[in-house]
Length: 364
Image 1: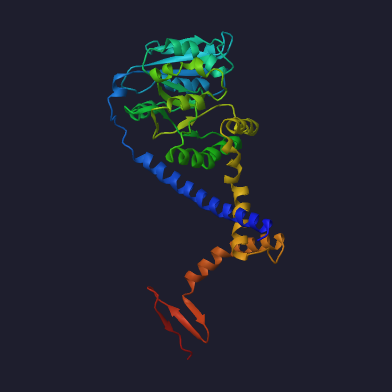
Image 2: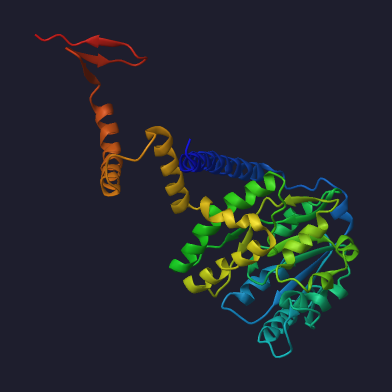
């Protein structure tokens, strides 16, 4: 067999395997998400009942939703001890005024304001360091400024069993106005959760740092937050450190993003962070083949090569037109089949009945 033929057969096998894998990921993600919805909210372990939670909020700048997002954390319905540690980039940051306003409005809430200090190249770690050093509880919840719906804290602590070291939330996006908001919601509701959930179900510890509850003593054993200041993707390396000897768990509720500043350009900029994953996990270079357009081309070519055994006898334009016509006819054909139960076969005509039987229609 010629080398080209071997390569073509190998590529067709890859396409068919890709088809099976993508469908498996779809089904697995849907089933696991349904499983999360059925989880009981009541606590099932003593660990989180004993230790309180230090909520670390990294802040930089002000967007239209910042104050409303932050205020939901000052009205937490949480039965145990917790504190809110507001961590701002610098003293001149406009977020300082927002924090002071909320601190004055809710004097009975255990909340404090901290100004960041530079300990490495990661600006988020620089923000959080003073707050982390002052944290007084055994559980640390790092939760980004754009997150709201804080009743997830009870859900997070309920998943913190004695063998779990980190609990994370599946990222999603709140309902907002505009096409850019729709674009974000479509992404975080389709391809992203498919990969995120299926990775975690199969044992790959895939974590995003926008909402993570962690054991502080485990982080301290890994060197504390300062140990991760040399990395840009601090969440990946923090999760990697905690993974040594500890399980991860996913909250039943999503990490609901509600940033007031969003656009198509900002969405594209966020997606370009793929370059980080490529540097950290080389297998990330295969991500594009899981997307709709490229996967369809590969799987379609693999199917026709396997079934046809050679090149098509018509042009790609003919294929596209034939595909469109066939898809357009599908509904009309189905409705016609329901409307008329008679069928012609060879020289006779028959009326179909339920159960698969039929009676011959005799000409009068």
